[in-house]
Length: 82
Image (cartoon, rainbow, N blue to C red; front, side, top):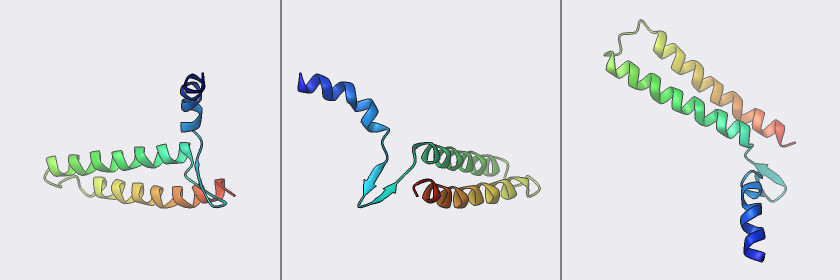
């Protein structure tokens, strides 16, 4: 019975942010957004390499902007945990 209850609750437990002391670490939606942006950066980097870095600076600019997005997600995550 205890094992069945634990298995049923496991999906719910997996969505709870990890708490260290009194500070929440991680926000599921922002963590996912950060990972999507990291994946996009990897795809843009691969596209640049495949095109011999000749994209008239647009891909490099896109990559810089996505890095800024990650820098904004971090404080958003901290603000969400207040």
